[in-house]
Length: 166
Image (cartoon, one colour):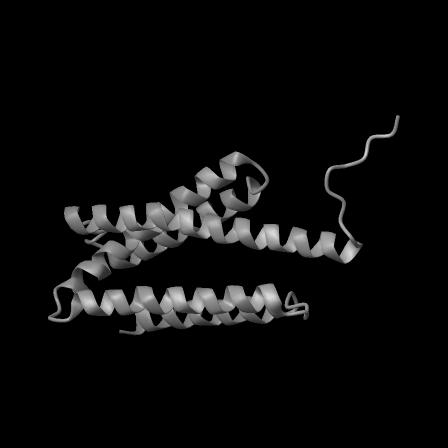
C-alpha cells in the first residue's frame, strides 16, 4: 500500500518559497536571540566599568581584533552544528562587553539614554526594512557580497589609520 504524504506542495516554486521563508524566519530568530548576550555583556561591562587594555590602547585594539576575528573563524568552522550557536552567542557577549565603555561615556551625557534608544530603534527599523526587502524581492542579491566586504575592509583600514594618526 502506498503512503500519501500529509502535505504535498502544489508546485516546486512553493517548496522553494517555503524553504526561503523558513531560512529567513530562523535567521531573524537567531539574530533576536543573539541580542540577549550582547545586551547582557554591555550591561555587565557598564556596571563593572570594564576597560580592555586601558594602559595601552594600541595593544588593546590589536587584541580586540584578534579575539573578534578568532570568534568569526570559530563561527565559520562550527556553523553547521549546535556549537556554532554557542560560539555566536559568545561572540555577541564579547561585542556587548566591548561596547560597554562607549555606552558608559554616552550615558554620562545629558541626553545619553535618548541617544542610545535612538540608535537601538533606528537599528530595529533598518533591520525590519531589510528583512522585508529580502523576503519580497525576486532579485538575487548575492552579488553584492564582494562589494560590501570591500567596503567593510576600507572602513576598517580608515578606522585604524585614524586611530594611529591622532
